[in-house]
Length: 482
Image (cartoon, helix red, strand yellow):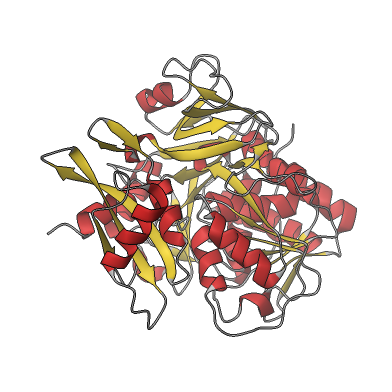
């Protein structure tokens, strides 16, 4: 096992002049420059009385300086704390207080989000002398990232250097990443997918990243012109698919990956048919340093499944966490070196999530087939229980996605006097679509039957999503209530 500092030093020694990170505008950071900026940043922290184990927060959009702050804090041995820029003032204040952050780094663009003192990360923090640093160990805490908190306060997920790097290793293993690969990072670094898969995956493999400030449909393919792979979420897959402009495709792309939420089979097949780029569906959690499952790069892929385990164990378990036979539905549980150490200052949540033998209860429902492929059927907390029968929201989503005008879809439960709960859904449609709620209800009845079909489909201009791009079903229920 090694630390993030070990990996940065090793890559600087191995390929110092190679580009690690660049922006679409042409700014670059080599591995050697990364090492120097990390050492200087760590020394500046020490000069301010901030060292190993102290919480250092970043509230910054994607960019070279953001990477310098993140990796510099990890290099120093600090508990690097991610602040979700779209979480809202109340949640941001809670995260900063709960994390015990000694300092918050911001950009000029994000300064207004932080109440009180904050430091704008500028070049002088990354240049200068370096001092002797505190020794680090793989078991030292490295990353603190908060869950989206759709129900109650967000929980602080603590990863060690070992588990954080294991997340990057799993992405490298599943996607066969090498120093020749150039990734496109459009997901925010304050989310586990962007930080672990894109950033850590590139770092541990010795590959490179292109990092625009944000995802944009109009610039996505030009931003990816030198890239061999990209990582996005299902809503972004759908937005790219529904882009009516024919844009020049990158020549070196070998795959894209989708994560953070289930990908509709109809959307995936249409995307691959139009752009001729395979989409590798995966599954990961904040608690597992991102990826736990992935479809293989070669051979058998199964549309509608996030794949098989890479770098960790996955089982389908009954309520007592005993493994169920193939084909039976239960909770998806994972065990491996990528699993979180604890929920910060929340021993009860930690004990509830991690069993005595190390299985992490994900809260996701699924089944595993005879080939080891997992099929996600829903969330335990999001199941719709109509008249005593379980209905997985994803089944309704997939029916809605069969219509080409549907860009986003999310089914959810509504309280009902007759059945306890009934099914409703919300969609976002392509611009100019004349599709009606009644037509969508009829489509669902034809696809999945009257019992599972929604009683009503709300047509919205936008569906609420968390930082990972996952549609928030519980919020949808509140948003559409009369």
